[in-house]
Image 1 (cartoon, rainbow, N blue to C red):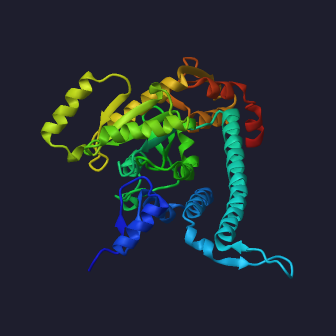
Image 2 (cartoon, rainbow, N blue to C red):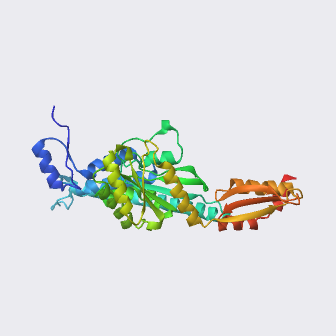
Image 3 (tube, rainbow, N blue to C red):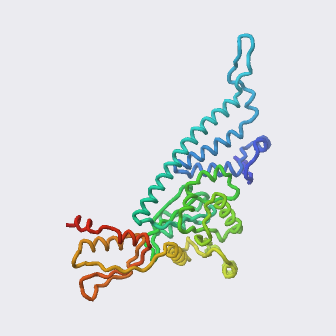
Length: 380
């Protein structure tokens, strides 16, 4: 049996090149754009990504309208004595595709505007309440192991384990995880990258890449076992830079994943190169074996604590005089994502409860500025 199709590993074939190869070989010929487009279509779930994909496909189809279609006239016009050439099929096809593109662009604009408004309202509400959870975004080349690492950081059940496949996730996946001294954190798994990806396809996951802009820490996952690891790393960073979503070095952590595939000699070489490296923090780990996860968690927690400017605070709560208020205050301190209770003790006089905790300025202002009498009246 011969091949059912042929893949040519190039960014994009010109229409005449594709047609010539198909005529020569007698099978469909696909380039990188066509293959990735089909994978994306199978993976996309959000309405915005689906619209972007159809727009990319429509633009591709317009570029592939061949001159052979021009020989057919759709209609013929003119007077009784003189007839016009009429509208050719290629013109009708192009006009139909353009109409569909115009409609989709309007739908996309509405979807983007709606998402932006929702995000703005949520961020504003979180800031006002002082309850914004820190965000950690995972980015990386496709199949670098981001999704499995995401599951390790959020303690996801093994039965929901990530697929070992290209572009296993096209839309964002956000889950809550817990870090020592930080409490709850939002971990965001973004789409995988690929070298020389057409900008029309990059736009298909523009929403997920925006998570890199709003995150507090960016974790760049790199497949250390891949011979092209450093080229893939540069490709991801360049794409983020082109889109204006690459955060400063102080907000980035490079995670070299799949260390379980390295030989002892390769691991030693990596450690020696790491000792001489400067700039972004680098961590070697294996999401599959859970090796290095604790070190990564500790480094993320350190970055978040530094960025949040947490400080030690002490409160004297009148638990004998106003027990309902103190109960509400303790509930706030223990349940707030940006506060960590370090210890409690009774004052020497025995009338107050002394609480030591760490919290950022915003949470502190919310706690001290809140009218706790309402909680007391509600309780009574």
